[in-house]
Length: 298
Ligand SMILES: [Zn+2]
Image 1: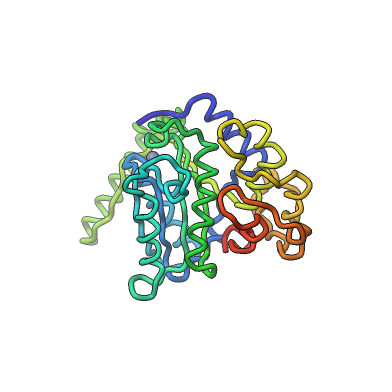
Image 2: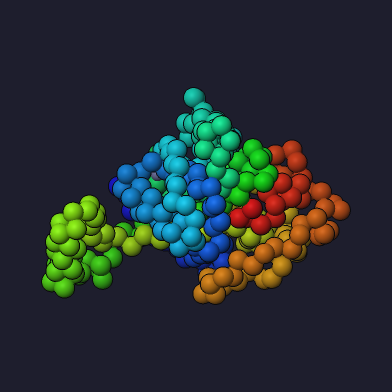
């Protein structure tokens, strides 16, 4: 299990400050049929991803039904441009599994959550930065949304910040240990099975990434810093003023929860009167935004 580099930490901090990575909000994820989750299969992170998805469902009052096809690297494999597992193409396999799971003949689940994470060993093997992962994740969203535009498709990045000193200090805390012991005793008395997981000393966080805000950020900042990472500009014709027009409000600070305000209907912006060319698809960006519904949770 690797650890975040100082560069990773700097990039994550910057993306949070810019409102690109937002603290997720359980109330935003509507999953009336359950949820298809596409994470990396990293066993060090899977318990946190799984329990987080279950908690989102609990908190939202939705059925707890996480359906989780997973491969090394997670949802970014679905992007055709992702260099990982191209032969056989892991992304095509994941797409097939999503199609089956969202179809009425199998599970009929209309909500899909796409994950990448950091640090990711698979991404490291291919020398992919967090920026590569996000670009491929956004492309994956386009492809998954194309399966059925009525499905909700939501993008998350899971970050393991490593051992947290504050949490580490609680490992041997007698009050905490006493609570664990009482829970086990109570379960025994009730004759029920209650799992008390090993105390997690890592600080792990899950951030939501809006497609439209990411594209706007690319125009305003990302291109300047990270264009050199790609053979082609991911969004070549998006200028900052235009990109900002897909946003109803300026990018919120990460310190303002609930800042992911609904986006202005893309169809009413000048973007549509002047279709733009998308790097990843032959469709214009405005078409792409329309296809994914403008809002990232649609
Ligand atoms: Zn991974």
